[in-house]
Length: 237
Image (cartoon, rainbow, N blue to C red; front, side, top):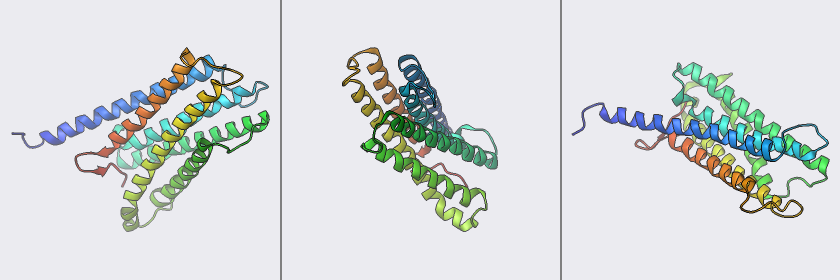
């Protein structure tokens, strides 16, 4: 029979393990997307005569911002041994950085399309991506106004908190799904004319593996955030 306090300690250890896995996958996702865009695609640039270098900024920032930094912001209440107010500020700042990365990543791909004579917003990836970044911006603004400054009444904050947590997690899941569409779309284009990237070549395998790591990161963040035993979310107060 389990002694008192043993179950909570066991649950906390499991949560800490899930959080650690999420951190490791976040680092792996960034390393892999940088390896792809720098080693295989030639580097990053917001200004260049070599237009694909401008595009390369897009996947890097979209993985770094709305996925890695947003995931770290979601996990900050679990992984940082700080006071509640300090964790709120870290949560807010990480989401702000994630949103900024997403906006700059969208700017980079629009710039690439305009300078390369490619139409904008013609694919499902682009539609879902714009919707996700827009929702992310609205979520951050609502959270700032409600929980930081000027701040809503304690009653309003308590009532809106579950919705804030759920919508934040749903937007994160949307960002991960959008990235999967983006990896698939880019790899499909590269395997066609004129590049004809080998289907089982090193770059194609790297892109697919990066997409899998990003997907696993999304799963890890969700599992590390949800209190499975209590079916409650770890949220801010």
